[in-house]
Image (cartoon, rainbow, N blue to C red; front, top):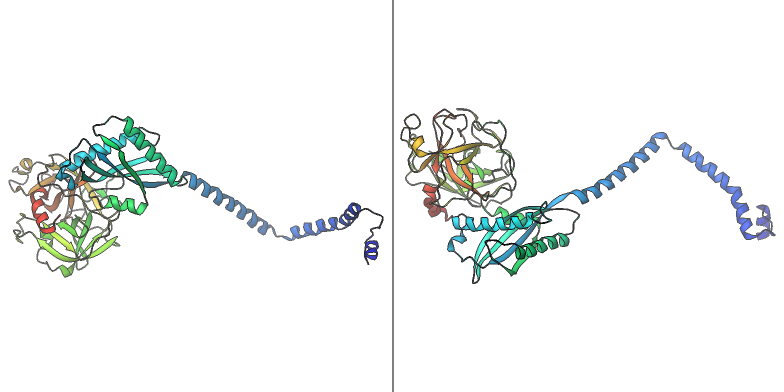
Length: 451
């Protein structure tokens, strides 16, 4: 059978195996090439185009993914703790809003900024923020959150090693006012959720730096962006915006007493959070409304215009929704200090509320100036303060009542200076906005809320 097959195929027995293969191949190969060529010719041009485009798109996606991994930066969070040996613990360090806490925290943050900005990580370093100062037999134990930006392709172990090495080496080499015990330095990497939570639970923090340019009006202000004023709340009567308020904890708001004039039933009130009234980021029912005992519902009486609102359930703190800091009762905000007022109020006198939060920069006006005859003619009492401009134009307006007037300290932490209370129309010359002075009522707020 084999002989017959080979003869029929035209292959002689006397031919070597290699020659047999060559002879067989030489007979069917040209035919195979011809068949393949015909098959290719039968493919329609549009199919070829689809194949080519698919290949190009696939390559582009692969290149894009590689580029993204190499170039995309993400926030990395670290918890650092260390013992400061040349500072004695002060009970005032327990509260983040005290001058003592602020001053020591500022020294620590300045030291850390100098360390990292003077290293090869200078372009990766974002910020440091002291979250607690605790007592220790050897001094003060500081806990700090460090934030960096690293390429997402960099391994967590590598970036943590860089941060730890710079911290240890430069603390040892740098001469600062603070003496840090090197053996107590601990650095732990945090996932994004834990890092965000630690920062969001600190009052008065804004996660981004914002510029204040534009011409949109609050009266004479501009639109706010997400996360710009995370402590702003809207309190609503039967689902309709009535006043602004400020978040001072995850269950308490502070606002103006006149917002509840005639309607104090908490079942009719809700609070919403986020820069938009609709849709809000979060919405909560109200459990209790506590109006200052000496507040009068008489229309022209503006004394004791403060109230606190307890929510039925806790706010979930995020970078867009969390609390402002309350100042100590003894704190003094200087005249002419730059502040910001925010709200959903009308853009002009007797106008309508807006859906997106507005902001305006104003300056504190001394009580002496505000009590001049041509301004408010002695109507400003110790529990009030004026802010705005004597030339008018920039001011709070109807619907902004109860909202925050805030000021940033040297650490960039925002404090509640005032509560929008009253004024003569909106933005009139010699008629700046009048606010409830928070420091004057600070002890009353603490007595009702424990904050």
